[in-house]
Image (cartoon, rainbow, N blue to C red):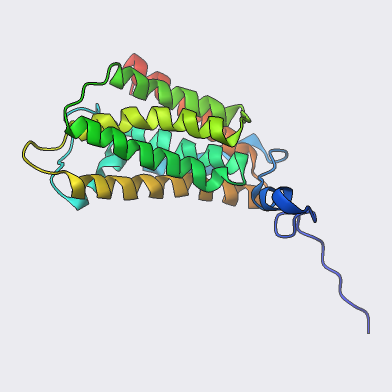
Length: 228
């Protein structure tokens, strides 16, 4: 009886690296291959979350956990940035897969606390819009930086996102439930970015990841110019 041989899947069975390289190779996402046409279709499916945007300050109820969960989905800037963090983390792989999203959520909560305490922070809205473009470029160009540097960049932008939403909490409320819901929704959007990157790579559409970065840049420019 002849033995049946199956073709080795490089994603399911990465090369036999050892130590740190083995851990990072397990989650690395190759960028070669895939068509722009099919990639664009995949990007369109991922951006279904991109609902019409509102300005950060003053939109949405901030009085409950449910409102916190829903709030990120109501702003195109939020959706774009949070998914971009997941995409960039997936491109980097290794420790960045969990450290970069965790950095965003953690520093965002610090920014939210500052906002609720009415601690002034300059250039909040410009920084938020800049984050959409900057993180989109990081994904579109597949910019490779050390994990610590990436976490610092992501955390810096997260501070402004958190501050903007901390200032929206209704006076006289702790805002703890709202921020908890917001943090959970943020983490979920990071997971959407990571899942999208992983899925498109498995489907031989890795170009879709970088096209998503271009879409994020377009969203940022559109918000800056008032088109969106």
